[in-house]
Figure 1 (spheres, helix red, strand yellow):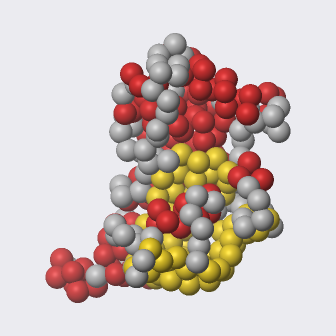
Figure 2: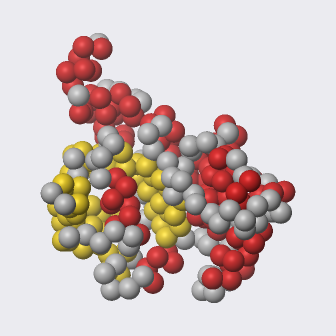
Figure 3: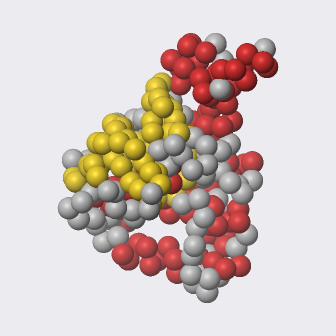
Length: 242
């Protein structure tokens, strides 16, 4: 579904991605984690076509991302920080997006989160007046609205209240059951424990490992993702803790 081959990117003399290769498939729920500056954001932007790599290739559903942007219609994206036109109302935003996506029929819309987050009740509010949590709700509802086969969520639970957080996590789990690919980044590893089945760990622009969480649990004898990472990346700290 997403194939990344020997992807590299530098900003000046700084190598941000170093020959990254990954294959992500339908039905996977993949957590992409790593320290700040590890290359996570750059890799996501490269998949979305917002960053041009220096070398390597990305194909999405068999389409080379260098040869046009039509592949993006298969992707629902929830950015870490949503920047909406301040004076546009919530209803106008959804109407505009639906008008732009002429390839999707109304019968195909997935409005589950739209309804669960009660976005209809804020439809007349200017986007600039929304709280951080409301913005996250709008962004999440938009990411799933057009029923994409690939969903990319960047720090999705930030600013969400506990109920909305649980509803979003359940939506992610449902999406993977339906055979969709979900790629999630988050610094809140406890949230990823519930929704991710695979983990990509990036460090200094390189993939340190890409494995099933269950296999990592067996390897480290840990159940929580944050403790798994400590065991694998900083074993000296893990031994000190025990």
